[in-house]
Image (cartoon, rainbow, N blue to C red; front, top):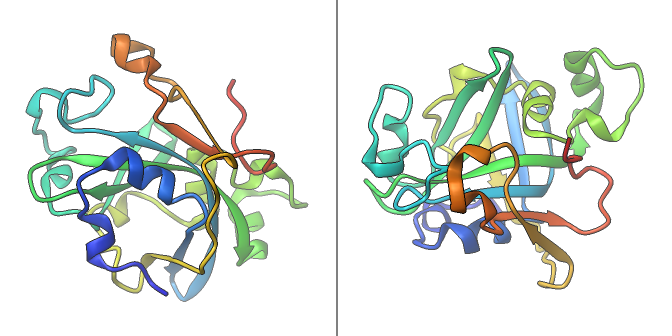
Length: 199
């Protein structure tokens, strides 16, 4: 079942980030379907989260999409090479987002290998937000895409995990965020080989 707008517009971004573990993310780029099960996420709260791009109600050309109603894609470039895929959540003007960090590939694996220039399937195919985006054909063109449409969407296949099966810890690469860097807002499926490795 495809996730509806109601799923994304709920107010608790941390709870939502945890619930996304076990949901499926798909892209249909130029007629090529790729996707898999989400196994790692991070929550970012627009209000009072120093790690969030919209902290202190910051509005720029890049972050403007964060202020839309939940259910759209926020894609941005890091290190000049990697596009990161985020799901905007909550109601209009709240600027909450969930970064999808890793998926366990399910469909379109041959295409993923080509996009990643890899000869064989290894966990680093989609383990990490930058390489995951490459594998799934996600780039800046998808900024603002409606997640209830036919280009990028999420599905609930009835898979759920208990709180004991999902680990929580600090988010990665946000040392600049002071005390907020310690918040346990990164979630991952315990024991899953597709979860990114902290460098």
